[in-house]
Length: 150
Image 1 (cartoon, rainbow, N blue to C red):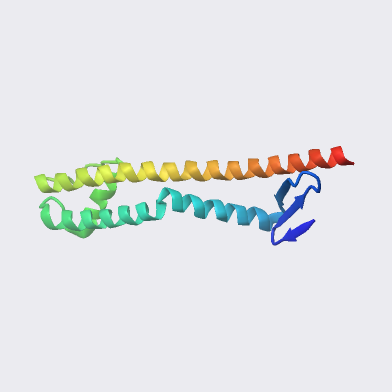
Image 2 (cartoon, rainbow, N blue to C red):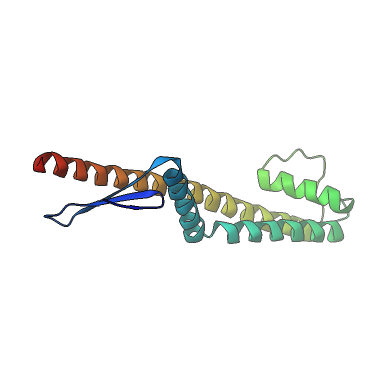
């Protein structure tokens, strides 16, 4: 039996099949971190989050500059927050055509970001379940082989 950090690998002598399993909490944490890093890279979640944040701040700044119904950057942030989260209290209303166009674009970007965020969460859960299933299958294969050769 060969032991490496967090993983135990066993090779059956006759078939050459290898079964790997995590050992203890360290293996579970390592697997979870690997799945998280892979998911974040594959889905582009970090890029999407930074892009959304930049768009949100830029839209707020533009809205504060061009719309007379918005009094300052704080009100613009609040108005953009309402638009993205679809709360729409109505306490701050955008009155100019340019302001409305900015809010519409920001709303579409917000909807797209929520879709990317949802996809990343689902992808993470699927990858974690797949990793656990593969680990379980490897252990079942090894256990079956061990009982046959005993």
